[in-house]
Length: 468
Image 1 (cartoon, rainbow, N blue to C red):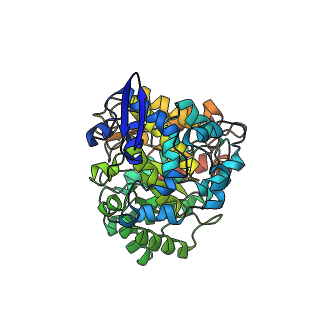
Image 2 (spheres, one colour; image 1 turned 90 degrees about the vertical axis):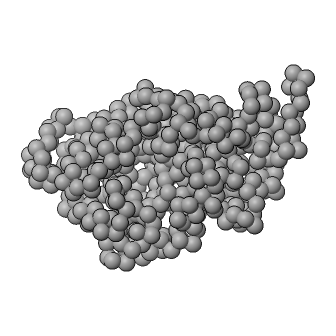
Image 3 (cartoon, helix red, strand yellow; image 1 turned 120 degrees about the horizontal axis):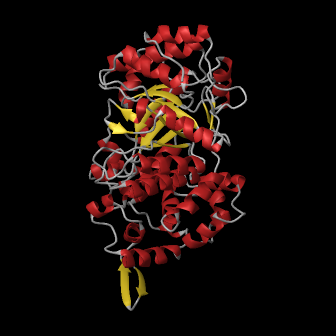
């Protein structure tokens, strides 16, 4: 029992799971689930109490029972007690102070990551302002490699997302050319297939591989099919770079996605066996999003932000190249407006980075949410300032297959120019070699494009693209 008195009123919270939920900043998903604080005073009381909870308590009081949930078992069984030792005496509030102090250097945070549980990260985020989340995440440095090096300081990568509503290869190629000419695609060239079947997946993978090999692009491709489809594609000899899967923070939610830890391990081993990476072997790509477990009625009574953080324990177990919080994709039932989306995106980035993950953010919203491009500009800018690993690059910021609003190639240029952020070094060199970016200012496009390279790209798409 956790209890606190404020203004002569006593607040009681029966367990740590309830306390965590009541302490969470307001969002529509928690209201929908019936776990949110009833009012601001109850939320403040819960946050006050949460600040006094010892970090060790999260090792002794599982929010989802150990015997019922394989994600909980993963969290507890993989906990690194030696890494946790330097902060094991702290409360949640003390931990916040430590994170904001000069003691929490990049090196110290990297060493600490294996000793943190997702619940610890979620708890401390609940008592932090946005500037706190940004300042601490900025100090975290997570570097991953496949065909290039992602996550280095003063760099921001992009996923080039050339989706098409019918998986048309010429349509995909047109968007692909457009994105490359804007300097996008170093994180991954990733397609969400309109139809999750083996034939379409294999065809798209073959096309992407041919483009990457033909132009010797130091990047990786991914068709975001279900992991079982990708495994079948591997068995058929398809050129698979990264294995994708959506994941969540409870065993039941992952079961609703048709996956478990064993299946993910099988897929990772299959991808590693292909040995397609040239500078590293981080071959997994995961996507998450607050509200996904609740939408499957598999949240186990947790608030959606804590549930989201637990998904990062699943991701961490497989040493991914990329983890992407698709923050506003599910809709206003879970994150109602721009304010809630911005907060959630920065929370997710903070928690993921603190746990040692290469965090990207799909800065996005659905058309029925109370959000607009101004809200996305704020999240994009603050996410990049916080040291985010990668963002999306979608033609016109309007995904014509998934029907949601994201970030465009121009948005990526804007934030790179604003904060002087460069793409991955190997990709930057490729952009220089082909005259796509300015040799002295790699965050800016060159004024002209070499004629031979331009013609070659035009032949790929069958369209006459200019270079702005």
